[in-house]
Image (cartoon, rainbow, N blue to C red; front, top):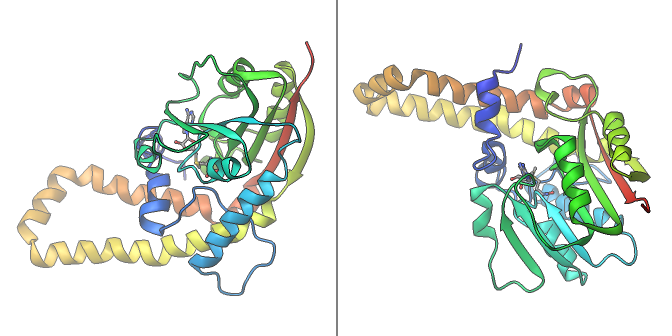
Length: 283
Ligand SMILES: C[S@@+](CC[C@H](N)C(=O)[O-])C[C@H]1O[C@@H](n2cnc3c(N)ncnc32)[C@H](O)[C@@H]1O
């Protein structure tokens, strides 16, 4: 079944991304990335996901080359990777266009600056030793990502990408880049691949957990609200459905779309997750 374009636009709207809001406000996560599992407990709980998310950040940190001081964290989410980098002595500028993310940052934080912007609109005089894209590289075109990276990198700087890729172009993963094409395109911008690692199996357990929540808890909650509304506000609910019918259907479609996206078998078959470190070659 094709993913409705409308649903896609609605759910990943840069200024108010429902997918990300769902993770923090509904699932209750304190990070927006998937996490990194080494050993998988039999029954995964929220605390396991949080530990895995911290491990994601610490293992990502191992990829930062020696000598890197300043970092531009593109699509910084709610700032946990950025703060970890700051705790290790780096100065970080994080950018995110999502209005919901502003509240997670304060102007008082030392060595951490937040800029409410897309990468496309970001134009700074600052230059960085490393540009980080942690699960953000698919939100913009490769051309925008690479040209802005080059614009803001110190000579000989690095680009570190950690995130998912499509392997088949299937509907729910079609907005992702293909890893091979990404590496090839990077070389056109003078960014040479230094290191690459597939970590699909390390992130899959988180998908399983979110999939379970969506199929059981969230569907149940939506049903509960529907029954409650019909029972206690029958007239208003009927009217709302009459006027908002399309929008209500859209909400269902969004859950369907997320469900397919995070389905672990579907993901393993049509997608992958890896880390790539590039260095800007000398001009
Ligand atoms: C999945 S979250 C990842 C957050 C964080 N990097 C992490 O690893 O937890 C994707 C991030 O990319 C941001 N984003 C979306 N569109 C963007 C764009 N055009 N330019 C820069 N960031 C964007 C989102 O707002 C969000 O902060």
